[in-house]
Picture 1 (cartoon, protein in one colour):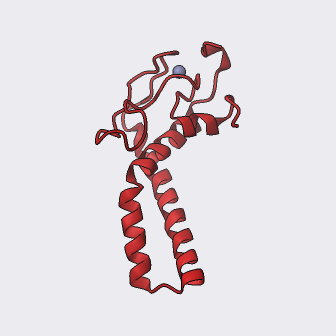
Picture 2: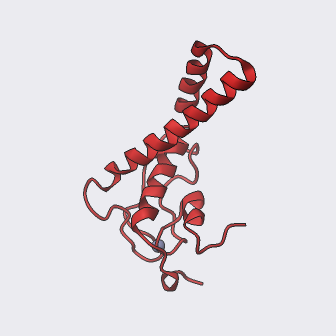
Picture 3: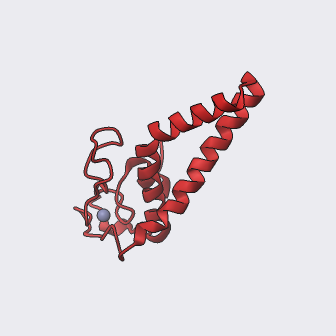
Amino acid sequence: MIAKESKLYSILHGTCPACHEGKVFVSSHSYASIHFTEMHEKCSVCRQAYEPEPGFFQGAMYVSYGITLGVAFAISIVMVLFFNASLWLVMGIITFLMFALLPVIFRSSRMIWLNMFISYKPRLSRN
Ligand SMILES: [Zn+2]
C-alpha cells in the first residue's frame, strides 16, 4: 500500500500531482484506447493545469529515454547471462518490448515529469 501523500501514488495511479485525486489522462489505463496520449487540460478536483507552459512535456522525453535505456539494459543482461541469447535475439526482444510498452513508458514518463515540478498540496484534496 502506497501512501496517498507519496509522489509514487500519483505516478502509479495517474492522478493529479497537486491533489492526487483528479485523473491526468482521459483513458482509464494505458491500453484502454488508441488515444492513450490524451490528457485533461486541468485537474477536475483542484484545477491544477497539467501543462504549465507550452512545450512542458519535452522534458518528459528525457525521462522516457532513461526508462527505455534501463529496461533495455536489464533485458540485455538477463538474456545474455541467464539464457546465453544471441545479439539478434536480444535486439528483437528489446524492439518488441519497446513497442509493446510504448503506452506505459509514455504515460509514466509524463507522470514522473509532472511530479518533478508540481508538489502535493493536501488541502486541495477532498479528504
Ligand atoms: Zn488536482
